[in-house]
Image 1 (tube, rainbow, N blue to C red):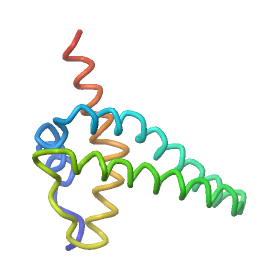
Image 2 (cartoon, rainbow, N blue to C red; image 1 turned 90 degrees about the horizontal axis):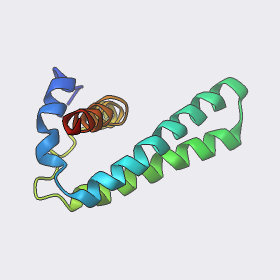
Image 3 (tube, rainbow, N blue to C red; image 1 turned 120 degrees about the horizontal axis):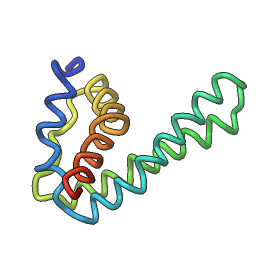
Amino acid sequence: MPIRPDLLRWQFAGYPANHQDRVNLVIHVLTVPLFWLGAAMLLRALITFSLLSLGIGFGLMLFAFLAQGIGHRREQNPPVPFDGAADFFSRIVVEQFVSFPRYALQGLRARD
């Protein structure tokens, strides 16, 4: 399947149901910044042609993804399975850079 239509709204609509478990939330809070750092290292690798940055960046992103997968398995309502490569990559990128930060900030604002 290609990228889901209206991916941002679709993913965020399911976020509360898919992120109820506190351990999963803690895993996300700890690993989303690691994913960001990994992505920055990949960009650095492209600019500097550094294999070390490439390896570190990919490793951080992979670690974050795998840890979050473990967290998602704890949920009563797991995420919708991926439907192909485009669906996988688009959903992962949107979750890391848009949906989870938005969800976390929304929760912080609700406590004020």
